Image 1: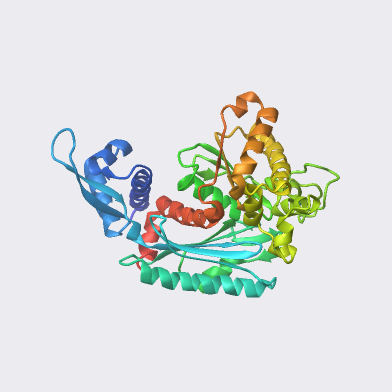
Image 2 (image 1 turned 45 degrees about the vertical axis):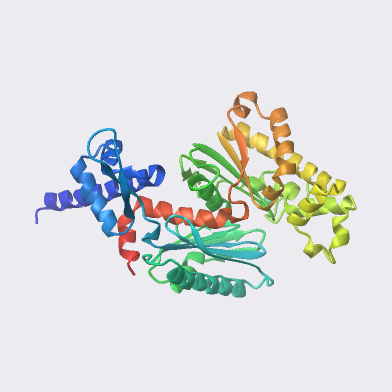
Length: 412
Ligand SMILES: [Zn+2]
């Protein structure tokens, strides 16, 4: 075959894949839509749209959802993404917990499990992650009645991930280095696309695709818990930086002579605003919460929130102090990045009623008016589920970008 024909065939296939992706993305944002509306929105002609839709229906990514009467002519058959296209597995490996969800393609959770990790043994923790994912896969197969197969698997971790290899390079709060996470999961789940990312990156994408930041363009995500993570999402895409490690806001130096940080530096922002700092303020203020626990390991942010609601002044002061430090850092980020929305997530966001007013006060005092007035701040919709929902978002985004790949894998 002459080379130019080979090129033409390849180009036509590529154009078709791009158009399939375009249709899926429009349906993701604007469902339900008719074929005519899709033709108008994409600029493709009606017969092309019909042919592409038929392929997506055959692959089960799209389904018809009844008739809607238009202003003129015959009623239209409406289309939407098919939640039953398959199921997705998403796991967050936290510093002291493992959380797993199984969702359908519509990001509806069909099974979930969360447990504390009682060991620091890396192999034992990884074995447990794989065992829970296998259980989630079985539950997905059983509960997602009539679903296609497993479409993808995502893992979020509190550390730096090399995106090309899926290797965890360093997780300061776990003290793990060079763990080939994607290889481990790919070996355990052969043939299934595996996505590994920083937990804050995943959470930020989850909030952008499904949650509080849906429809915003320049989203600054801040997640405070054991450490402080963050991410910037521009028009639905993570800003990863040159080597893929952007968003490590928790390691901005706020006090050059401050407390040592697990990253090896000193006075990082996360040494001023993590949950352990809240607990330290409780001790300094002799909070009544401390009388309720046998040892400090039993302290939790929800306990402190209950105490603050009941009027415990030390609990309130702890949130006031941490809120102020959060606000100082966020004001600097607002000046640097000029986002239209700040989403505050992580376990500390459960204390939003105490933290947000203080953060907003610091923003008013410290962010430039022109930046501040363009910015809203809100709590993460998924709070402690943000990362696992973000894992589902990562898989969905990959399918929307390249549905052909998943048409094959989804049938397995
Ligand atoms: Zn640090």
